Length: 95
Image (cartoon, rainbow, N blue to C red; front, top):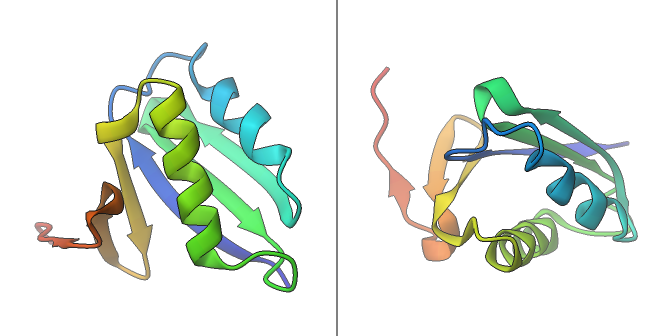
């Protein structure tokens, strides 16, 4: 059974930038699919929880973001909660 993590990368509306995340994340064992939605500034990662857990996926995303110049632009979405970068601090959102 696959799980997924969704994250936004501010200023990711550049179509040439999104393949960086896809290429790097698809190299990791356990990650099954990476979907890019550049017009929404979102990337969705589907993974096999038997091979990698959500926390490791999150760390890999942060690592790719850091190496590609998007370090402070990543926002994670987890079941309706939004977390800014690796601060693990919930961000208040307007409903």
